[in-house]
Image 1 (cartoon, rainbow, N blue to C red):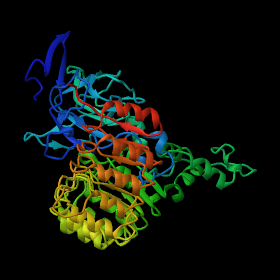
Image 2: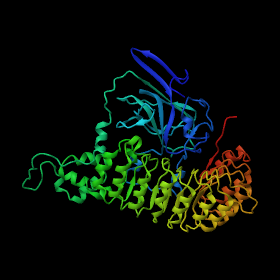
Image 3: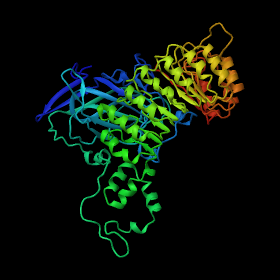
Image 4: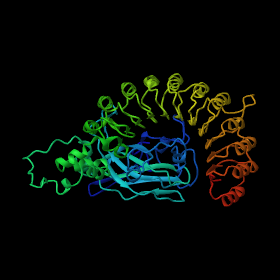
Amino acid sequence: MGCCSSLSNCSLHSVAMTKTVSQFAEDVVHFSSQYGTDGNVSYVVPNLAGPSTIYPNYEDVTAACVFRTYGSWWQQAPSAPCPIGRFHKKTFLGQDFVDLLYAEKVYPTEVRIYETYHPGAVVQIFACELYMNQNGQMVNHDVRWQLLWSGEPQLSSDARIFSPPLKKVKFAANLIRLVFHHLHLNYYTELDAVELVGTVSEHDDGTDLDAVYASHLQALSISPQDGTDVEVLSAGITTDNGYFDLLPGELIQLIFGDLELPDLCRVAATCRLFKKHCYDQLLFLELDLQPRWHMVNVRTLEGLKGRCEHLQKLSLSWCGDWEAITPEPFSRFISDCGANLLCLRLAACVFLTAKNINVIASTCQQLQELDLSSVRILDSDAFDPLATLTNLTRLNLYRTRISEQVTIKIIRNSPKLEYINLDAVQTIQNYDNVAAELAKCRNLLSVNLWRARTLTLTGLSILAKGCKDMLEIDLGWCVWLRSDGSNYHIENFVQSCKKLRKLYLTALRSVSDSDLYAIAANLPDLEQLDILGTLAVGPMSVQRVLESCPKLRLFDLSFCNGVPEDAVRLWRETYPNVSIKRSFVSS
């Protein structure tokens, strides 16, 4: 998969001393989520590395890159996290990202994204220049990002090569970040490859086009203005404040409360009056830095420290890559500003160390929500201090390397736990033991155990007995949930947990018609049901679910070979309020 290993992978030609390079990604170095399992080859993000192998076919293919979610269904589920701050919908569409490394640095002229199933998720393309030492290791040289393109999702019903017009960049890049938005998608988007085209003879003047803009965020600690004292008029109005001095302070604060963080930084440099209001700590009770992940660094944290003493909610998800944030400054920030934190989101943060986790555990004793999803850099022992956080109600450990013993210890010391995500945690050896501990959490409403490979019907039965008020459970790809000689089945589970609104049974081959009849009889509030790949169900039991679950809005019947296409088409007409999914592969 090197830059010039084949004509299909890399082609060069010279035009007036300018060399154009076309290359496919050499490696996937970071990403936020995936449908497949780490270390596997089916539906995993690393499939994006290398040349195109699927295009121009339009179909569901296991060799594609597929992310964890699609559509609005996960946002409508009981476990959906509440937004932080006021501008989450206006300023940031990102739900997933992937970082692609290329062999040769170029000035990008094209980024060709091979989309082969449900295209239209890409909303941003960034370029980055990474430096490598002689051993091929990445080293920090004030990594800079440049936004090449951003736009609304552009849907298509066919496979395509999406190549939007790019902004000119002032430096040679060897890393591309794609940012994805899934809410509008009808089903999982799939990608085949990403080709980077660019030139290599431009002169790099070292100037980032976003540098001026970024500096407002990266130097948030604005010093008092120099100069002579401000003249005071007889009416008490200062000459540099216009008529703002006539306004009540509460009204000025209300106006400034509608400004986003970069604008607050700009306004703070205008005059003393504005600076006073921009530094008001009531404006920094909730701080979502994820939308500015490409601008956030150590200087950002240092600049914000003085205004965040009463901080209650913080998101640094996606921030700090390539040593933009390092462990020690993060620990200092948490130590100084974390005592009142109720919510802390650190999804896909690669700078975290065991010491950072210890600082979080010792400082943030009031913490109710903690998101460490896709934090792959920590080993299991690093999570152990989290057991001291006894107020946790939400815990997201998706794709982490936490062990069974540490997971049980944290759950045992979290009596208020309501929502837990243990999706794709491969380091838990016996999920039945974890389920037995979760059964003691009487407030539990949501359990995500997707790809909990060792969970059996024994563990599920224990969970059901202890947590009858559950609203949501994801048991997708729990391949050991099959008949074990006992009389316990999925139908027994739904008879115990009758409040379920979301039930995912993806790829559970043993799910049968009797299970669907039990779902229809016991789950009147069911809104989402996924039985993808359940081969033993027929049209009669599916019909019964549609008739008996009036609140149903999502029903995934993909790869249910016992359900004919004609029946699906009829149900879509008869039940227009239900989104019935039917994925396919080409014959």
